Amino acid sequence: MKSELSSTRPRRSAPMRDLEKVEFRSIRPEELTSLVDIEGVNLPLFMRSKVLVLARIDREFVGMCGIRGILNTSSTEVSEKFQGQGIGNELMTRVIDAARKRGEKLILSTAYTTNYRSLRLTQKFGFVNIFVFTGNEVDEMMTILPLSRLGWSAVVLLRLFRRASPRTLGLFYAVVQRLVSKT
Ligand SMILES: CC(C)(COP(=O)(O)OP(=O)(O)OC[C@H]1O[C@@H](n2cnc3c(N)ncnc32)[C@H](O)[C@@H]1OP(=O)(O)O)[C@@H](O)C(=O)NCCC(=O)NCCS
Image (cartoon, rainbow, N blue to C red):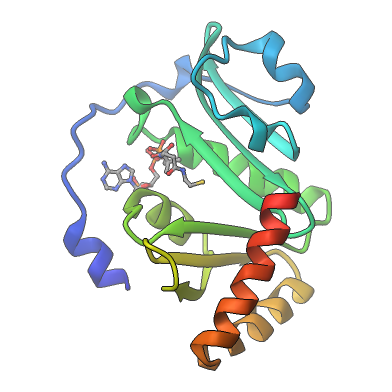
């Protein structure tokens, strides 16, 4: 997995930006609309966050990362023109710290296997690959960051599904997706 990602990694095009200009702050989802101009931001997911960190420059939206639901599903979004400059990294650091402080047991992340940036980002923070689900049009990788012993137990248990039949895996994946989309 690692070598495959490295070999397909394109060169960075954006110059590194001074992160000091970017304001990072933990917010409640209901504060979002008053803090940034939200046009073009995928709000529905973030409005359900229990931990949410916003990045902005003046009032301009630069990025956001949050976790939601019982599986602590993470979503991260950085404005296209600011991608590849360390903002996703900083957002993720802050969300993980906040989740730990709240006593959360794990964080779940799913990403298309073609989304190398997202996969590199989670890999860097120690998210563990659970399995790749190949039943849809695009393969999807499910990863988990354990934050406690219980989180590690979940990883061990969920990784058993890697040996399951495609049908069982499909059913299991459907259950997880349902939980993820409902919460
Ligand atoms: C995925 C995403 C959140 C990452 O945010 P970002 O600000 O671009 O990422 P960062 O600049 O902090 O980089 C984080 C890591 O991603 C990888 N990365 C970032 N830009 C990269 C690039 N141009 N080429 C290769 N790898 C890159 C690197 O591993 C990097 O860490 P490193 O520089 O210390 O090695 C952002 O690209 C994005 O919003 N994408 C669209 C939405 C999405 O796919 N969200 C994730 C699924 S919820």
